[in-house]
Length: 295
Image 1: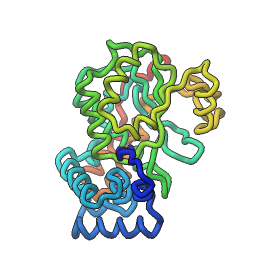
Image 2 (image 1 turned 60 degrees about the horizontal axis):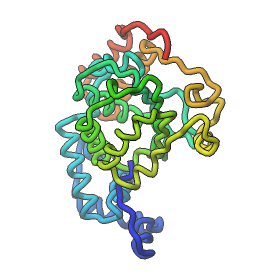
Image 3 (image 1 turned 90 degrees about the vertical axis):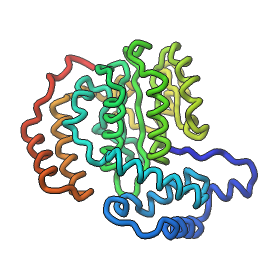
Image 4 (image 1 turned 90 degrees about the horizontal axis):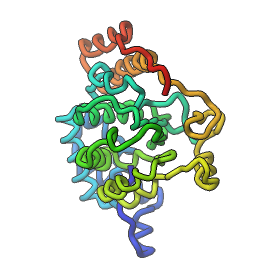
């Protein structure tokens, strides 16, 4: 997600959008400030990663260093790369959040969110599920692509299925503090009027630059529909988002896919063989809940 504040003067604007040479210089400066890294920290802190943190802090190296060090500390305790699908599979049974099998027009990974299909009450597990899917989406980004797109379907949403404000705040804090510059756009498709009250509170916790990436889309509004179609091919876009494709979430198939990705993640992060074997075993068995009748 983008979480740097807008600045007014042309000089400040230039600081936000440095030249390629200046960008490289800033990345090298941040790299030197961080000092030697090893293990998973070195895997995480790629040049592209350092650039995202610099962008999130207006290219201020000291602030970017502080932000990144806080992320590394969080990752060392929360260990998002070690979350296995088996730990969060129950959260995904209804298809309330999953990685889509299509990309947007520029090849970005797409996460589909359906908050109306909420099926659990543990806020900690719900956040853990989101973090797992964020890590999975990052793992599946095309080479050279750093951002992803979100599609949010409000069918069936109500205050009874909505997360508490505190959980929303905690979730936003994790996303903005530890996943900067990861969101390209988030389309909120046909949100009910009562959502506007919730949104007014939630966006208080968000950086203004991020709120600009959140797009409200209403099926009868020509401009918002055209905007969405500029990001997605209608032939790939599911009908629930105004496209022509049929999308049906199959929990068993998705569980197998996630188990395979767990093996890929373990290899990337250098997990021990025992962990990798456990993930592989789950890929073979994939004991999951029955597929929901409809979505």
